[in-house]
Image (cartoon, rainbow, N blue to C red; front, side):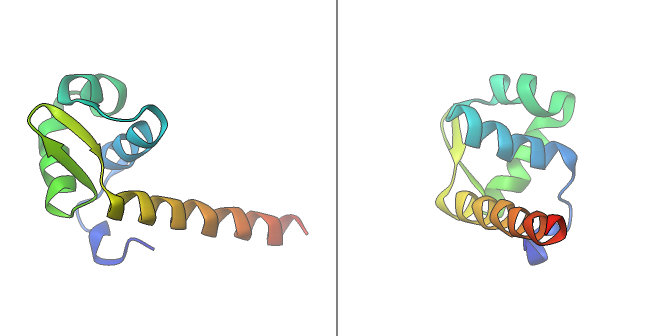
Length: 86
């Protein structure tokens, strides 16, 4: 689903996307606290470079591309679960 954007994408990046989707825009300090801990800036820079999140000064939010990819992935997983559960 995330294709080439999976390279370098780890659990902290996933946690950040989910945190931004759930709680909306926040500062990098808040995002690090909620999602990724000490490597936050590395993951933030990586997610920004892939246009999955955007940064305006200290405010970070889920970018349209990130929201679309996250929504698509979760929908794909939901449909797969429904098929497996019959």
